[in-house]
Amino acid sequence: MREPESRDDALSAALRLLAKEVRRRVLRHSQGHLLSGGNETLKLDLRLPTAARGKWLEQTVGEASVALDEALRQLLLHRTVFQPGSVYCLRCRSARCEHTQPAQSTEVFAGYSPSGVPLFLEHGQWLLEQKDPRVDQLYHKPPRLLARVTLGNDLTGRLLPAFRDLDSGYHIHGQVAAGWFRFPDANRIDQPLALTFQVVSSQPAKGPKRFGLNLIGRVPGDEPLETLFDRAGELPWAAAAEWAQGVLRQVERSLTRKQPPADESIDKRLEGLLNGLARRLERERRARERRTTHGHQRHREKDRPTWKAQADLAAAREEELLFDTRRETLVVLGERGRAHVFNQAGKLVTSIRCSPLSVERRRKNGIWRQATSAEIEAFKQHASVETRAHRD
Image (cartoon, rainbow, N blue to C red; front, side):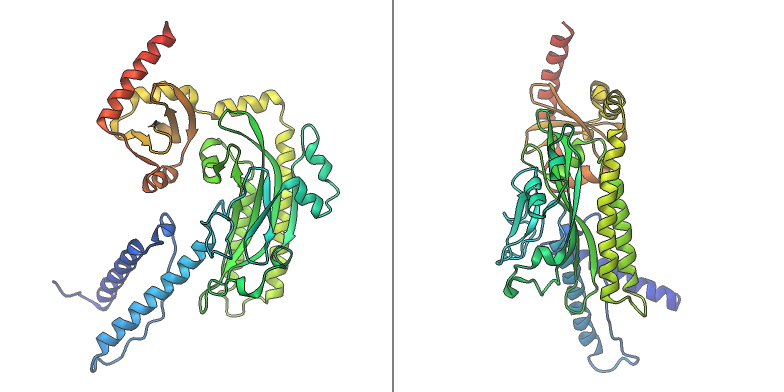
């Protein structure tokens, strides 16, 4: 192996090897998949001797290995408590147990039980319990979207001390419960949808504090929230959520300064964020309602890529034909994020828009896989019969 030519070359080679080891440990970790697609960094505290004496290398390697594992553990703790679509269950210490999602699309997060189990209530009932005077507007025709801010202490006030997760430093600073949004179910009938936008932070021992905006809810038709991002052409809360995430990044950066802001200052800023988010969600809904019914319908029809299904199918290469293992359907990938779902009888089920990241995530999760030659051939035979029948 050729020796590095300069000090910088030697340092560059060492850092490449260290980064390679970080990637290796992420891949072999049981929860490493939580970091896929992200751009996270690990902060390491390493001690290096100025003179190579005794067993310095063995000792330094051991310390570096422990530091790597601890930094990775702290990073994954934040990702473990912060799972889009789900609230963190303090009893199970997981965001993936059976308690973490509402039972239906109209429910919002209503706080924790004394034993740390998440509680959910229908959005109208939650507003009644909060004595919100606007609750009757939920049931007007058309219904208004109402957003209600609740601070963290009101959501965790009943928790017993034994069920506070001190290991991850998980903390809810507050939330915005909002509804009704309206989205189609599997039969394309509009249904009400309530969502909870939650400002969460985590801070393991000796680790940095990390913030996130978590979105909690369930899609009409009893599906996980992640399916909504593929079904809808646009999400009416996207701009407001992006604004809130930007504020949280600024708050997080402020903590790295030599003189970080006091906790009271951060709490006040986060409360302002929640109130601003609620206003933006309601304002965006009113702006959308001002569109004419005809204009809104044209907008949705233009965005839906269904009309390109047959053209994309005809032009699709073999690697663009995927099989949905849950629904046993064929997925045809087209241009500009179009994806068309056909059943095994060759009929078009729906057309959606998927980002490359969304497609890759489904591949990694095993939801979508490459269709086999036999599946493609059987589909093409049924599709040609369906096309001829439609033409006749």
